[in-house]
Image (tube, rainbow over all chains, first blue to last red):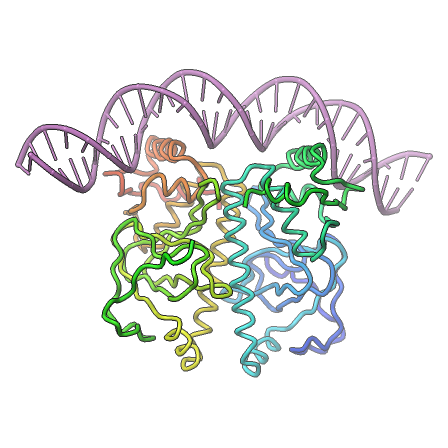
Amino acid sequence: MGASENKVDQSGNTARAEGVSRPIQVPAKETIFLEGDAAHHLYEVVASVGKIYKMMPDGRVIITGFAYRGALLGIARAGIYFYNLDAVTDMSLNAYSKAATEARLREDPDFLQHLFEDTNDELAQAQERILLLGQKTPVEKVSSFLRRVRVWQREDQQVHLPMTRHDIADYLGLTTETVSRTFTQLRDQNVIRSMNQHDVEILDLPQLTHLSEN
Amino acid sequence: MGASENKVDQSGNTARAEGVSRPIQVPAKETIFLEGDAAHHLYEVVASVGKIYKMMPDGRVIITGFAYRGALLGIARAGIYFYNLDAVTDMSLNAYSKAATEARLREDPDFLQHLFEDTNDELAQAQERILLLGQKTPVEKVSSFLRRVRVWQREDQQVHLPMTRHDIADYLGLTTETVSRTFTQLRDQNVIRSMNQHDVEILDLPQLTHLSEN
DNA sequence: CGCATGCTTGAGACGGATCAAGTAGTGTGG
DNA sequence: CCACACTACTTGATCCGTCTCAAGCATGCG
């Protein structure tokens, strides 16, 4: 931990509050920051998807969330990031320096309000995940996950899953095998159909909703 | 759901921002508000403990958190509470009306900052819970829980557990039986000692920390 | 084209849930 | 203040579902 933050915007001009500077590019699977790093930047997802995760000393992982376009990442606690962030696929982000963020907080009275609402939304989502992890069965977990991704993407039937089965497992507190078996099960019941590993079509949304049990 | 909010401060004088009005008293096990209710108040815990929980249509429950003195409860999303709140034991709360809260937001520029930091802390705690629920074993869960309560209470060895084993189970995503067996196990290993059902003494904190696996 | 990585499927083990019974606490009314 | 009843907790036996281990198959990249 520490000193692992990705290099930011070589050009030297600090990102402005409005995100004037060119977004930085992070290749797939690369780490953007680690839990425990000093929080030098606030990031905003421009394109692609990031995974937010925590790791135990022995290597067990839980992905606490996937970050889609518009997500604000790297809000710190006592100046320290409290989770890890990786790019799932090649990713593009706006990076705002600490100074720029603080300046914006001073100048733009609505910005804090926005940060607050964003964090509050994340808290509500985190509580949904707590319910999912603590009480749901694998079928309910996977069904809830597919519905969730559908909302993130704002698409109707076609769900794109850029992450691996292993990532999905780490997000749902299952193993890869169980996730795979559950997908097979949903496919056999004609609830979903999959063209390839990363694209799923929802055939029966009411049934998927029913299976997700809320 | 809806229309279940506890009657607030009969005296008629709206709670002021500073909490001038006498705190309201809620008897043990009573519900203060339900998920889906219109958020008319912001509550602050004065004494005793509340349980924040979510429920599935079929009755499965997860307690997303316990609220100790100082906790701010009832921050809404789109004017609606997104969790249920019950008193664990006889409880005393300050209730701030929506109008009072909005007035304070206008007059006190630090208040929003405070709300934001509070919510951010809760988010960090929620992510810890997500790790716990998704990856930890029962022993790790119970050990983590005991350490957590110890911090909430700011005591060293003596841990007071006002909630039932069933509540603890609903908090850790386990059954009452498993929680009970795990307590017995920790007792047999001389990690803890219990005088009665609600009080536990930590005999070996390093070992408890080790068992909590982080 | 071949190798590496990711996904699927199967067989078996194991841990936590469930079912069941008994014990200890707690509160209430006589 | 005690007796009784109800609720909470503990412990045991068994069952079931998910993990683990293992092998084969698809996919994509060099």
